Image (cartoon, rainbow, N blue to C red; front, side):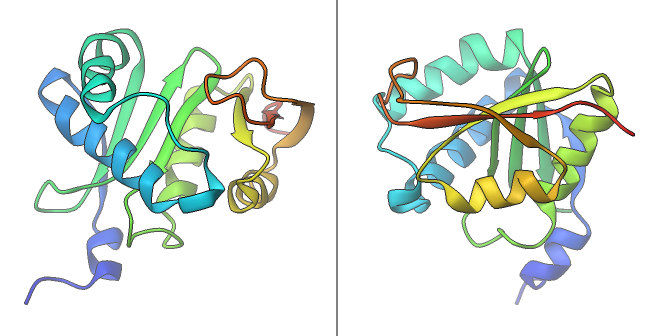
Length: 161
């Protein structure tokens, strides 16, 4: 029997993802989004398209961080694109254990001048999470600017103090 979920999370290490990690990164993004159910609108891209985007765009052009357990199993992913948290997903079964918080704190340390991100209006758990971490609502839209055409909210964190 392997270590408990809590033990795996407690020993999780953060590291920068490279091109060889593209499949793991895509797996977390795809699996987490699917597990979110109605909180996140269905994606408009196939899994194959998502995997290609991660391999050819996300990993080479953005700052991608993986939280993985001692066996190298990915537990969470965060993608930073400039001052934007472009993606932050925790693998199904590992939410609520502090991984997202560790990644957000890491993002704040890397971008002390401030961060911004978008979340869907339907993703109330994510909104509560970001509010707890000092983000504030900057704007809300009808979703006409995102691929899913779903109402969303932009959050900002303006730095320490």
